[in-house]
Image 1 (cartoon, rainbow, N blue to C red):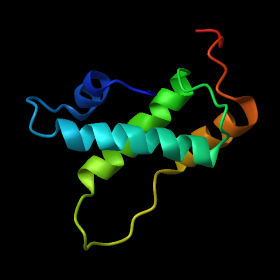
Image 2: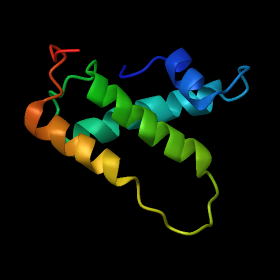
Image 3: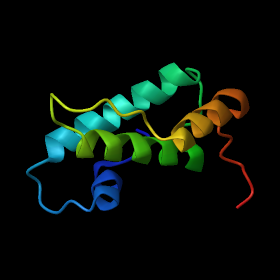
Image 4: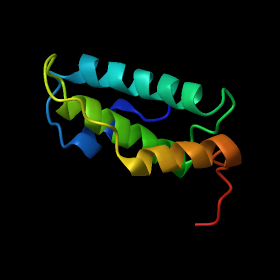
Length: 95
């Protein structure tokens, strides 16, 4: 998986286990979203892929109402997805 449940909960600042199933579904959906938006062979362990997943998961976690104003995901997410698509999110990036 692109993120573990623990990594996602830490990023969301969620304690307890009441939302574990929901957050796990967000992690799985984020992985599918990233693969569909980029390529099936994107490196999901790269820091860019993990950052994209965190942005998606936080957005979905904070915007759960069925009715509300339509908001676009952050431009930064689109930029990250383009980089992953064309560069593959190579995990051998210099750090």
